[in-house]
Structure formats: C-alpha cells, structure tokens
Image (cartoon, rainbow, N blue to C red; front, side, top):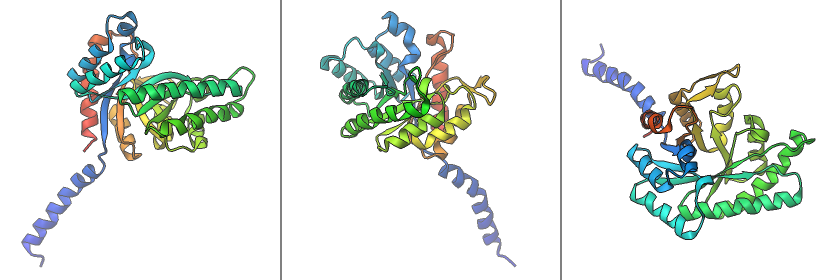
Length: 288
C-alpha cells in the first residue's frame, strides 16, 4: 500500500503542474504607446513630445514609439532634450517610425531611399531607440509584386547593413501597398537575409484573417503594434483579443513591446488611458 505521505506529495505535484506550465508559457513583453495615437494634438501643436512622454509615464506604460512626423526638428539639441525627458520619466523611446518606402523602381531612387533610411537610423541612435519602422511602399504602376519584392529587398538589405552596425533593427510594417499582407512582407525580410531586418507587425492592418496573418509574421517580428480591432476571416473588423495576441507572441518567441496604436474616432484623451491600462494588465499577465 502506498504510504500516505507519498500520496500527498504526488497530489501536490499534480496540482502544481498546471502552474509550472503556465509559468513556463510566460514571456518577456512590455507595454508601449505609438505616438501616432495622439496625431491630432501633435499635428495641431497643442501637444509636444515632452508632454506626451509624461502622459505615457503617468499611464504606467513602459515606452513610446515615436512617430517622427511631428518632430519640430532633428537637431542634436532637440533629440538630446527628448532623450533626457524620457529618462527622467522612466520611459524608453524604443522605436522611431519614419516614412522610408522600400519599394523603389530605379537604382537612383533605391540609392536615395537607402540614404533616407540611414538618416533616420542616426536619429534613432541619438534618442536611444533600437528600432526604426519602415514601409514596404507601393507597387509602381505597371510592375508586378514579383518585380517589386527585389527592389524592396535591395533597399532593406543595404539599410540594415548600416543599422546593424549601430545595433538598430529595421522593421517593415504590414501597411498597404507591397506589404498589405503577410506573405510578401515575410518574403522581403527573408530575402534581405540580415538579422537586423525584421517585421514591425501591426495586427490591425491586415485586410482579412488578422490572427492567421499575424502568426506568419511573428517569427520575423522585431516590434509590434496592436489596435482595438482586427480583421476576421471575411474581412469584417472585430474587437481585437489582446490576450490572444500576447499568447501568440510569447509562443512564437517574441520578446519586446506590444504598442497600442489608437485609430478610433473617439477622443484620444479620454479613450487611451483606459486602453493603456488594459494593455498593461494583459502584457504583465503574460510576462515574467
């Protein structure tokens, strides 16, 4: 007959097993905000980046993805001020989002776009960001996707050769044009063949099958955006399940930021704090 103590120990081990498995399934995620969420006050100049940095800190988020469209300038003095404001508010400026468009049909345009990317990599370095978001760009009129992908690959590869020397990743966002869907976005990154070239995965941008499209991108993701909605199998928008997305990211081995990008019609000032609290809670529940 099994000793009573042995039975108790065995039962305790079985009871603890789900907890151990749950702990093993946790990853390392952080909660951030995309500055584009406050595009209206930033564009109207009723809010500046230093104010936004303080807001992000007050909301208990970990960092800010800085959309550079509303930087008043990129002087060393201004970028140093931003970096200092972030440090004083315990906020990481982990990413800069720029208007680099990879797909360029001529050698001259591709060379120019590589130089454009390098300029923004230097800006990222000065604010302490280790990621630069870029776009795939449009497929030129008369060209095919098969022709356009190598053009984008060339720019991404050469730009990543430069950014990698500074420890900065380039993330191609799935955001219309050549990178509307996961398949060509992944193909561009794979063909670039550079460890500093990846995907800025925006789960809310896919026209349909948002979760399955995101799953294809996760192995290549170097940064992520989440919106309040995601496309269902038929293309209709449904409320995004951020906990499901977080679990997918953890399972796929992604470590880094889940960044809220707010694009709904409700006022950002009133809507974002509650959403930020939800994201913070979800991220922490999936992280060690």
